[in-house]
Image (cartoon, rainbow over all chains, first blue to last red; front, top):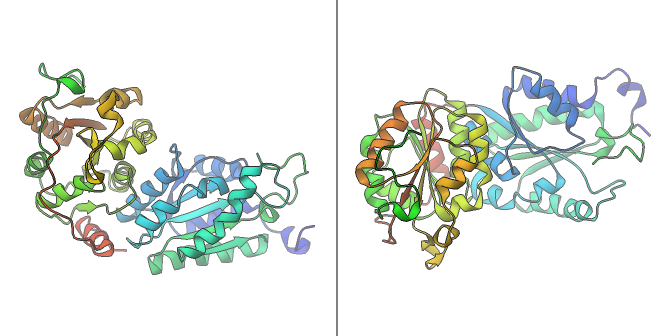
Length: 185
Length: 204
């Protein structure tokens, strides 16, 4: 099941790797609208004084906060699930892209590979076409051994090119060891 | 907030003022380095017309996000006073942000709501504030205890002075007329953003 059993054994879990990548890139502001899959990462950033953590009512708000913070000199990221991303096309098209603000997004991918929720399955199909049509760099991460490289390089490129970017966390990365019943809520 | 003796208790009791005039008064009260986020449309047109400053950010889209953007700036630069100016139609789109700001207890942040009860730029259709929603009551309910209507121009200035001197977050609501804006913001997003960052002393 796991794509690279020999390497995954020696690597920390995905949320620890991602947290270290955020730290290494001085991404201090974490904003999120909760998601079951992201829970270990959310708990870890709450427990770590390096980060300022805000959970606003909507993903749009989180993008606004991260955009403002970046203009003020602090790097931030928005954590969300697929359905949350579906609320963002307007703010990405009218704030992050035209103003050239590197809003970083981490999306836990729902709606595929065993989804039970019809709504999630539908919005999952809209996510990549929206990102592509807005010209937003995005990568789907499915393998633990590729996570650090992809996340680190994507964040660096976003900042250097003044462009928003999205990291999509596949269930292959985040849920590979859970049973069917324990699937994401 | 310990409101002044003249503080109107609700929207109907507040004097109807003028957005361009209030923007001029606001800019005149600044000490120099305060950041201002001007919400989409007529709000930032009149802010622009009140005198361009490198510490002003003018929104050409993302309706409803002046307050979240202002919160982000305030978080990043806690020593700088930050003001978000938003119209009634815009804030109605993103009421949750009032709760976010309250929960964050952002001391250096002030929200100014310019409320004429209409979507002026799209043809004057009524917003919910023209039909019974009181933004100050909503803000207080969201946890922003220091929220008040400005009774008149002098009261507006006094509230701005206090908000720039004492711990927030503050929300000042101004009832305004339906006069058109007196200017129009230059439409160059990248330049607006770049100038704003220079105004905030940020080099990327």
